[in-house]
Length: 168
Image (cartoon, rainbow, N blue to C red; front, top):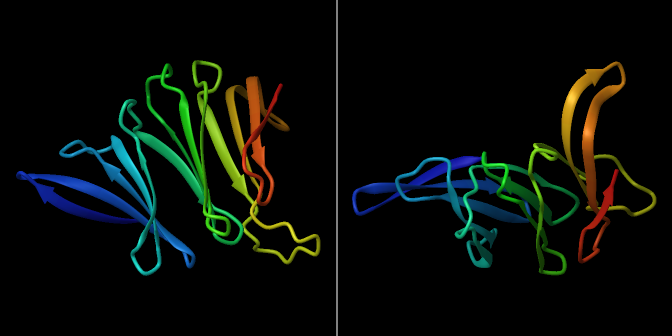
């Protein structure tokens, strides 16, 4: 991630720029306020804007993101206030499909993880770009992993157009 600043009216605006070989993701912070995101954009590698998502109307101060597969990206945004739902944006550059959804946060889903098929290993089945988001609340770390009170798994396989959710 590269940090880029612009100035307006004497205060700066920070842009977090994350490039891949397929496209560039830009997450913009509020003017003069570090750590509050207001805008999300995707550009092609020549600088042409492909998608824009305004993040106003809710406060998002944290994110977890991942490029996965060929030409695919998913970001999960949230705020320290547990009453603000998670915002989930996924982009498939092969189909120019932008997916926006949300998931309740609350005290039951304070932690998260994104795992994606990043095509690191050759795959004879042709899987390319699946993504799994795990939302949970861990209360104990046992011998085999985290003990959780709540756990939802959101997933989308290659080239699907929406997330499915499995609730434990």
